[in-house]
Image (cartoon, rainbow, N blue to C red; front, side, top):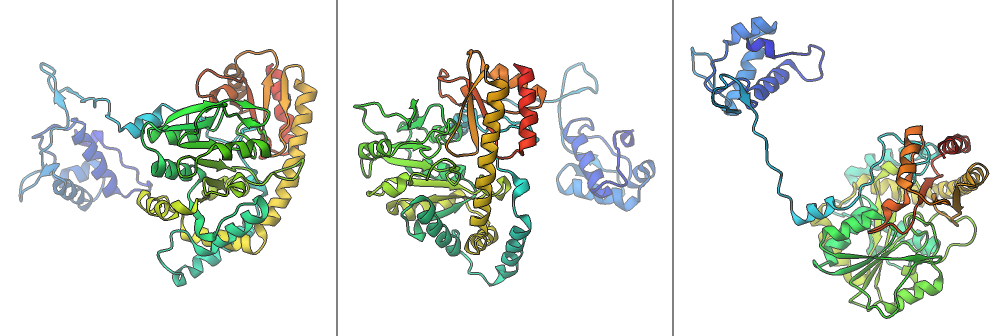
Length: 476
């Protein structure tokens, strides 16, 4: 009986008509109710299922409109679709047709070759790197900004993808805090920093172009460039960050994180920054400066941005609000070279990399009214203390196993395995014990140059850090 194949939830969110229609559709599409099968009358099926006749009639009518059933006055519905291929000699058994492997575009195929996005657990656990402490965010103030923005939305100008108030507020903030030299028209608001990298790659890269990235480095950048057809070359690191091989010709694009190298946290010196600028050919070589957590400096005054040193408009400056505010705000920004602003805005619209206008307006108010800087100053003190606490606990409990590199800023640090060995195996043991870290070797392009652990400290209170380090000590 067909009624025996159907189960309706009386308290389910979906109505009875929707449930019945969906289940009959799946039974026909899968071949369990075969072509030319005559279904029970609406009266009979309604009685068997304990529902009204109208419920069954509406379901039959919807399936007839979709082409699954044929209906005529005074006759029972007939199935018109063959949902499966019958095997010879199998009687009424139906075998599902297995779809072949989908043919992907070159863009999607390149993305699948990259270990990104990183494979993290669904729930946030200590000491996952790359996260701010959402518990410390001033949610009530932010909610007021959002409410005012929503109320005023009907009176706002329509059509501005990058909201003028936020562009102006960001341009002023970046000039003061990071030495970025840019007019408001150069600031683009995007759903994330990753969206900025995708936009730049799509705009500038021709398949086969060479792109330099740090090795180890940020895999999201590698993913964006490879997907656009670039030939990505990993450049090694020293104590000053990314190294340039003497005598090499600068490529089409260079990606770097000079303020806090990802993942090591090393600071690129002013001399090294100047060397890269001098080697870049205006109009032929472009540099992306990713300042993903440049707001957090603890031990010294921050070095001005690379973009602020550039006199020829060669540097893209990329940033995000997910590290300083909260990860679910989903806003990043790009300061573009003047010569590319118009082209990038056209590409931004066509690619749909557009942030919600009411979020942009709320953030503009949050910055203009001083809430952003007040929150930043508070978190800078808090994260500084958490960094020092993690370093102290690691040295006390794991000093014989791990060598901690204390970064001058940022929200994460690297601990290297003193005795060598596989960092991926260590990460697996730690995850099973309840501590989540990232293996440094997974951030290398080819054969790993480094083995160690990438540990976050910003999102965790000192008591949570202490507990996590004790757990780590039991795993080594």
